[in-house]
Image (cartoon, rainbow, N blue to C red; front, side):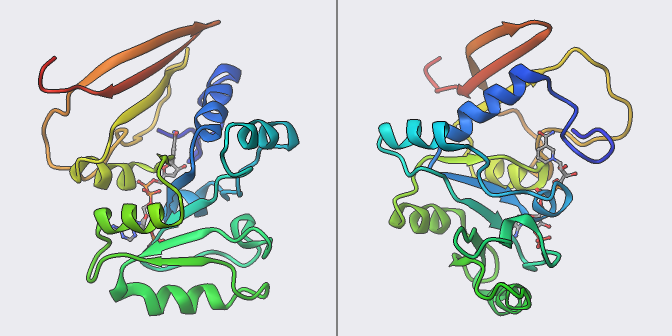
Length: 211
Ligand SMILES: NC(=O)c1ccc[n+]([C@@H]2O[C@H](COP(=O)([O-])OP(=O)(O)OC[C@H]3O[C@@H](n4cnc5c(N)ncnc54)[C@H](OP(=O)(O)O)[C@@H]3O)[C@@H](O)[C@H]2O)c1
């Protein structure tokens, strides 16, 4: 869902705190190329306190952002590739790797990404997870958008869903939470429902067959 083509403005302060909490528990933030471009996606935004809290839990001070892409398209000066000291991961398939490398090479900052090539004609999600795990990144938090989330749903890789009900009705033709997965129900079980002001913060896990 978006408001004026952006997610900003949909959720309130509690939603933003919940998002920060999910980010702070993750090893890597997985984001689709369109969201990276549309939202001018930055690297992990946590300041010194959040980084220190992560380190105290044995996590890297900042989780890398991993952009999934077939094109590697990023405008020059995009925040995700603006700091060579904090390169993002970029995930693509072997068939698209040369194009992605060429697209990323035009950035004046030089080599701006750690390229993860997983799968031949198209990205193979088990290979992505294996490649991330080889970098010590096992807690993968997908921040969207809907088409990337749809791929993960279709691949059976959605274990947990965090969503917020905000006190507003929004017009427009926004997509569902996931787009592109075959039609069908994927059962979830509610783990927690927190009320903060007028916002409702929901956490679900994938329901097991025995439930
Ligand atoms: N409300 C919210 O919380 C929220 C959260 C996130 C996003 N959004 C909104 O969602 C919109 C974008 O969502 P979207 O569904 O159109 O796009 P998306 O899922 O963000 O990105 C789709 C793109 O991801 C890459 N991609 C996806 N699957 C791939 C695969 N198997 N192999 C290689 N690359 C793959 C491709 O990138 P390339 O085009 O680079 O090749 C593809 O065009 C934005 O407007 C954003 O603001 C809202």
